[in-house]
Image (cartoon, rainbow, N blue to C red; front, side, top):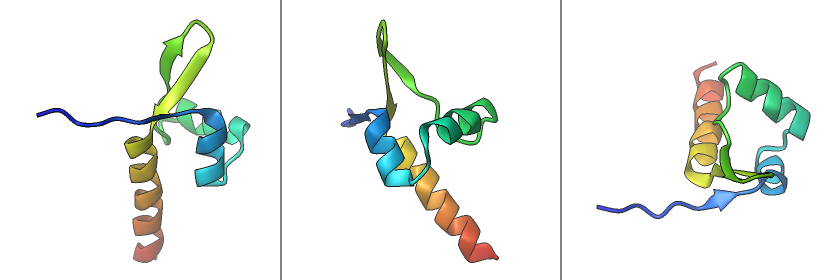
Length: 65
């Protein structure tokens, strides 16, 4: 069974999360945000479904309070 993966670039990640580039990379260092994948020599992206799962988890955490 194959899944369709969509790779999104940093501008879209910052747009959908509302988090700036610096904070995204800080969260990645702390293992609190999905890691980027290398697309080329100077190009990275994120798996869209992983970013959406991260957002959903933030919503779930909020609802526990």
